Image 1: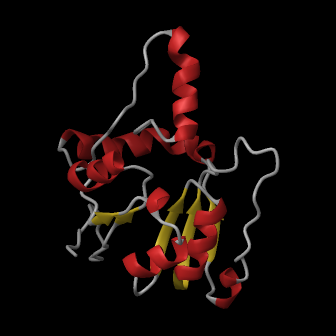
Image 2: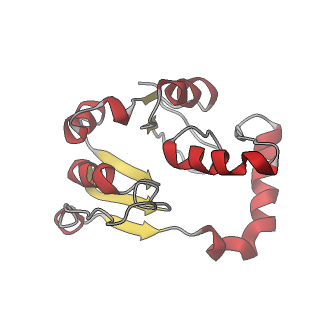
Length: 170
């Protein structure tokens, strides 16, 4: 597995893997975004076994947009003092009865830091963010992907696409 050094003043090397829900998104992550590897979680019958296979030494950092069964499996595979940024719960948004997360005790056993991340908490820093990020976008070091839908009549289908995994990007 190759390692990337990201644009920061730290010397850390971070292997990055993704867990999208389609073959097309795997290709996007690996070929366009430079992920080291990716697997389709929807094709896995046992998420815990899949994570053990793809992360044999455990997961250091997990960025969660899904929650539910995926977070349950991730908690079993986190390393001691690993970190989870929770910024979405797409698997729970349209359920009459949201699923519970059953492996939260691992946050104690492994001293895992689980913290919510809400973009509106950082609006005051938006201009500073743009000063840092826009040069990286211009240099091609950060790739931006947008999923555009034109016409108000197509808005319902676009919204449904978000919840069914058809969309890519923002």
